Image 1 (cartoon, one colour):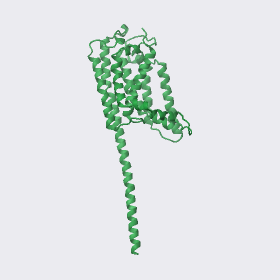
Image 2 (cartoon, one colour):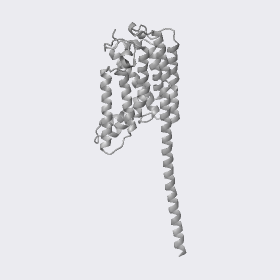
Image 3 (cartoon, helix red, strand yellow):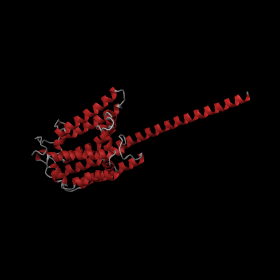
Image 4 (spheres, one colour):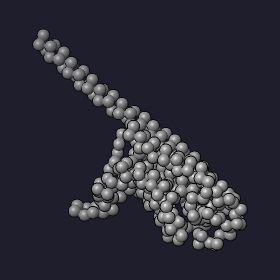
Amino acid sequence: MDHSGHGMDLLPFTLGRGLAWSADPFFLVACLLGLGLYGWGVVRLVRRGDKWPVGRTVSFVVGVLLVLLVTCTGLNDYGMVMFSVHMVQHMVISMLAPIVLLLGAPITLALRALPVAGKGRKGPRELLLMLLHSWYMRIVTHPAFTIPMFIASLYALYFTPMFDFLMGSKPGHVTMMLHFLAVGLFFFWPIMGVDPGPHRPGYLMRMLELFAGMPFHAFFGIALMMASTPMVKTYENPPASLGIDALADQNAAGGIAWAFSEIPSVLVLLALLFQWYGSESRQARRQDRAADRDGDKELEAYNAYLASLNARSR
C-alpha cells in the first residue's frame, strides 16, 4: 500500500523514521528557491552598506526549515496513512511556519533589494508594488476574508469529501499543503504587521482578529477528540503493519489540533506586544525631539528679545 508515492515500508511510527529524509520534489525546489532569493536580497543590501536585522534572516530560515520538516521527511509519508501525523503537518505548515516566515519580512526585503526600473518601465519591484496595492490583495488580506477562510480550511475540508479527493493523488496532496501554507500566511500577515500590506489595522484590532479564529480551531480539535467513529474516510483503515486504531489516532489528531491553537496565539501575541512597545517608544522619542526643538526655538526667541531690549537701553 503506497499512498505517498515514496514506496515507504510501513512500520510503526518512530521519531527517527519520521524525521528521515524523504524529499517532496516540489517543496524541496520551492524552499531552496525561497532561501536563495532571500539570501540574494540580504547580500545585495549588505554590499551597498545597508543593514538588515540578523533576527529577521534567522526567522525566515527557520520558517523554511519548518516547511521542509513536514514535506521532505518521513512525516510526509506517515501523514498519508496516519491522521495524527498529518495533523502535525497541517498545524506546522499553516500556523507555525507562516508566523516565523512573516517575522522574516520577505516583502520588505524584496522592496529594498530589488532595483528601481527606469522611467516609464516596470520591473519586478514595480510589479510587486502593483500587486500589494491591487484590489485582489485588499480582498484576500481583509479579515472578512481571512478569518472565514482560516475556519473553512478546517471544517469544509475535513468534514467533506474534498479531503479524500485531494489525498487520492500526489498533486492533490501538494495542492492541499500549499493551501494550508497560503491560508496561514494571509491570516497572519495583517496581524503580524511586519511587512507592508493593504490592510494594516491598529494593534488592538490585530489582537481581536487573532482571537476571532482561534476558538473555532479549538472546537475543531475537540470535535475530533469527542467523535465515537472515524470521521475521515482516508484514515478509516490504517495499514495493519502500523498497529494503530483509527479512532485512537483520530482522537490524537484532535488533541494536536486543539493544542496548536494555543501555541501560535502566544507567539503572535508576544510579537504584537513587542511591536506595540517599540512603536510607542519611537513615538515618544519623536515627541521628545519635537519638544526639544520647540524649546530651543522659544529660548532663541527669548534671547533675541533680551538682546533687543538691551539694544534699546543703550
